[in-house]
Image 1 (cartoon, each protein chain N blue to C red):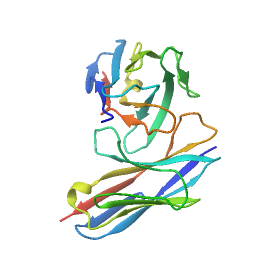
Image 2: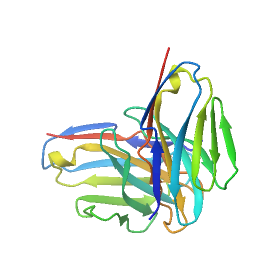
Image 3: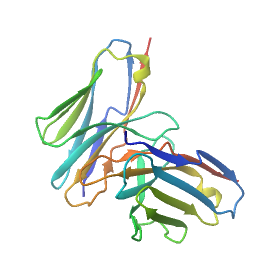
Length: 115
Length: 111
């Protein structure tokens, strides 16, 4: 149980393109979803937290107009990187959790490469 | 502000050589301490949640323990397939649902 699916697993695109990443909880309802960014050999950096039907809460330093998050249902959240540039290249990982103190379960990440 | 420090940064073991990974934390009221395993190019995989000092959890060759200041992940007779980065994270009472992660311990188990 507690499976989180993230697509696509890898994206390579040109500078200026917008890229959408999907995160789905397959067998549970996710009251809260999280988006992280991870640099090589570093830990996860939380970008934003989203609750179903509410606006996402962004961490300090994360541009909300650059990283658009939509959490339209209890099983789906999307992250759109708008007008992506090479500095946005990174490994993006989503997670989802159910109620209260249940653990976060993670997707397998999306490797984004902007040329 | 919640803080998590993991040590060692990297650990190399021979197959069958038991050891422990350390996670020291400071948190304003612990709601849960979590251990995850992360393989290269993958998202973290949930292992354990510990809620209070003295609690222990086991899964195959792994055993996690918790005190008021630190947690240990004990690996007994490891196998090469246990090679991964092990991440520790805390959920404090003042941080809504957010986790604070440590930087991880990269474990390599050789034959």
